[in-house]
Length: 309
Length: 215
Image 1 (cartoon, rainbow over the protein chains, first blue to last red):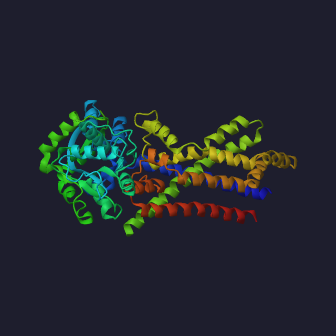
Image 2 (cartoon, helix red, strand yellow):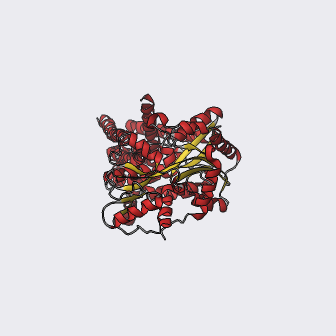
């Protein structure tokens, strides 16, 4: 018995030593690594397309020793991370929220780097007759009356994302309150999941065109078509901005600022992204229309009501 | 295709490393704790407390750890947020009640009797403890496997304190969650199958190891 117990205790000691060595190695790896980590919280819709990974690769090639880490979260959560000092930069698309954080002194050095369009998707049969609407306000009014008469279902993101806030803003401007109607359902999910739910239920939804095109090209949205898309309707413009958190400092901040500059200098990359896979680009670079976008941003930031009337 | 494959491999290996590490770490304090618990009588309240914590929601623990490790939290200076080490610590804490309670059940009752028996037969204190550990090894191993399964399958902690950063803190469950959010059900399913196979294989291999040892 004593020989066996001896063996076991030796084994235990060996195990403990391995454990200790691994802990030391693990923490040394983090503490001693000379890489500069830049934590960037980003809205999910932007991350899911793969554009950011491509930009990250280019940036890290240009600045060796720098590692960009994307944390994908809703716009609301991303801004919270910046406020707490857990992210050094944010990529977001909710002007009204962004403005609050800029005014509170959480964010600085904001730049608009890309935009695309929101669209209304729904079943091809279009029982609400959204096709032919002249403005998104009119389209939402048609959706509301069809919903109230029980003909259709509308799926809302319901997650305080940029897209959700925009949807609430449009309902507010249309003077309508869809909440409480059984036809208005909040998915509390990301864009892709919301689209998949809308597809399953042959329902209407407000989506950004990038997410829709990507899923559509993969054959996952057979019963959803674009019913309203109008790049000239300012309510349908989806503006992506980047900021650096004031709380961030040192090398991380220096490179975060360089990354923002990099976004502005590499607009061509944004211009062509997705063209090959999805038939058309998912985003448009901001540089072509920077002044108009700036005006629109201010309009959204100050004028858009969040919430129902 | 090969890039997708290497990414799946990378995520799987990271899951094994992170959760395996967390399990060993947790076992290093949970097994002694269970042993000490088994030597005491009247531990009903403590037992109930530990058992109730077994089902701790992972997002709740994840949130608490996030607030602790956040730059504006009390442990922010450790700079652990969004590192694999943060996930390891979180998972180790998560599975502690599970390992203690299952291990305690394996040790309860017979630990004291074996200890007394060994001591009365003239064994030294450490020899007696070793005997108890050896005799209870199958139960202890089973509880460690359960701990690993819970750790490798949890999502909330890895998401909250790991941040699902590609190539750094992305593990299987967070990768599945991202794939589902992206509508990429196929790769989510592939990862899910790997996850299940991994859990089953761990359990079987530990059982086989134990079997060989017992002979």
